[in-house]
Image (cartoon, rainbow, N blue to C red; front, side, top):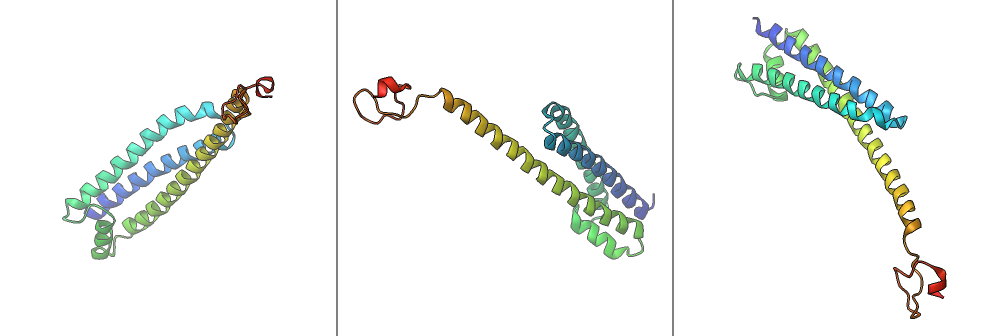
Length: 157
């Protein structure tokens, strides 16, 4: 198979896998913003499968580059494109893949921020609930301040 076409096809397959991953990230973001916690567990499983597919496609691309004695990473693609300036399909495909990867990275960052906000909110709610059943930090029967007090005003007066 022609090396140009083979690399373009590998890049296209990787891009398709990233598009699927992005779709899952968007659905995850919707579930997080709409507080639909029950939708998150299935999305996690889908996200793991999609991330593995992206990694597998990237490995295919890197193996293809290595088989041509090029570095198996961005430098390898750069070297390929530099020595094959006529491979416009690979150039366009690579640029599109980089745009998709940037989008996926940003969605992942935003989703992580949303998860942190939910966790913070839950921690605050839990603290408020636990605080309502913890003893009040009042003065103990001996007249000394006790951070654990007896929990009632009568024993603290």
